Image (cartoon, rainbow, N blue to C red):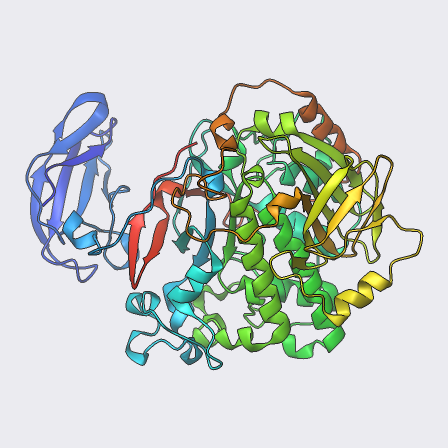
Length: 569
């Protein structure tokens, strides 16, 4: 039973707690109406005990005669359509013998996968038992596989390595600079794949010129520093937006709204609506562009999020607003994992998630820390490139190249580096396909140092240029970073390595608005190449993702715990 009920409504004249006879429907009759008492700071309360599984609302009356029925924004459950809340006891929401995940130190440690209960398991090739398909029980069913024996559903989510699963949608209209609220970053979404208001529009990942400054600003956490040009500004629907730290932005390139990334690229690159219209070369080209866009999301400062299925280039047949479409459009096709190229793309995203979790330098939230340690190398001529040092002084190099040819980059700090990510591969799965090898061999003889082979090492001397592979992300780091990651760290606050003394996130706290040299460098870099980029879409983005409200799926042994996760910056 709930020990008390509290409702913050300082402008109300009267507040009542209304309970209902059943929580199984949205139109059950009222059971009782309890008048609440006004306490301190405009909080109304009622001490009457309400049994677990009881549906309820707050009925709020104002001086002008208006009365509103409101669900409880802090409730852990609701009836269908969410207009009535439901009391749930801890006993009901606790999975026996499961272990709760400890809170993260900061939002930027999160990697969020968004999905829909029905979409995830409705397809027969999900391997979910027929009675559970499209239902909550289907989502937590273990041991499911597609037609070729590849993991699906809950097991697949675990394999991806995500820290949170968001059951769409879960968001609120909020805008506060000094909060733990995080906002969908439409700026990086449109800046990578093109405006969602034009299916044909392209942008950085698909080769659009003069977009480097905008992408650099996004990669460094949407700081919108003084002196940045208009075309490089992260507007996100608000031209005056100023975030408090990188943990307030959720970077993504595909979510439940609009065309999937795959469908968007079909149209914007080739003028095609469906996958079936692409030839083999176009399919390969689309996957290269997809990998470049995905890389930006997972290498950028901020919170990383993607829609489940994006990693296997999910299609909805060109439907850009499928909320009212049937299962044939929305259900995940798990057999796409049987396609070698799509499976390779999925493996690449899994690797990016692992690499992000293993390298704290990619998950810094505080702008001061980012600016102190970052140095912009270039944001022009199809390249976005910068260096950043970790807490031990080790140097990392992040580069995005949208050109059709390998492109030289100068200015990289001398030293020995491991090639963590390059040419659509990672050191975790560095096998070079014939296509990748051919692309590397096609590089002009006078290009810089070869960094095209993920898993290799390269010695860079002062004055050396490196040849960044075509249509590729590149991540260089200390050779020690090329180790097999621990998928189950004992301390989730430091998912890179629980025994590593480099707990650089302890320094990751906002410390005012001091402008470091690195900050000025970043602003100047963002201005190197910038042009007006049109209006930024607000579709699904002026809403805020509250990390504390995201539904977490924690897989423990054969059980799965669904809980609310709290996070702070």
